[in-house]
Image (cartoon, rainbow, N blue to C red):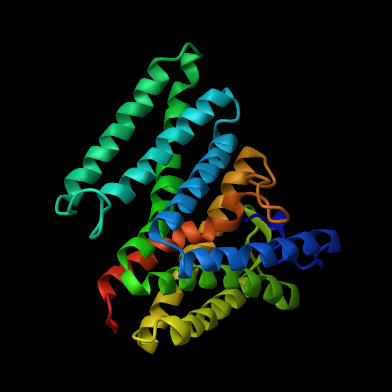
Length: 302
């Protein structure tokens, strides 16, 4: 999330009261609903929620990178990316909804091929400025990977990790969102050295370290409550890598917004900006968490 978004900016200036109140109210309403879906909700409900979030995230992504294209082009790109994510959930992994999961590499290649064909055919069949096709194609495929692929891992955590799925999802969200909070307060209190001034001028090294500490604390709390089989070293490794990836994802989304000249990716979440503004760190960290959870199963790795 960019420095203008407040939470991840690690700002040295106090947050405006008019911005803080709606953020708090929105969080108070949304967090219990989200936790209920994760902990007691059926797999299909969580998958449907993630599919909707994927579509919103893709729409925001293409709204930034394909802003010179007609809305129909952005909608087409969004549909292709959402279908890609849904296909991964339905056909790929140890517990696919359709099939037995024994041919994952072939299925993945087939899905990618269909996405590529669909992207070309979608652009081939439109009467438009051919000079912009290359850029539209490139941004379209980038969105499929950046948003469609990564969002699917969030749904797969609940589908594939059995009784531990809710714990892994909550650990993921707690680590990335507490990193946001820790970075903000540490940046305000101690921030002096700029982290990435050209991309996000208000982020600081001190804020990043505060975010890392908050991530580690969050991971150990969730481990104690929901993932007791993880060793202390497991939790430290998970948290360290997730934090580095999450803060990198934060900077990368800021880079996208700065390069396209927008303040927020969208306005769908009142007081929090767009969907991508809230999950930019999650999208970079979730493949790592899914990989570690898959390797670990029901026992600690380290």
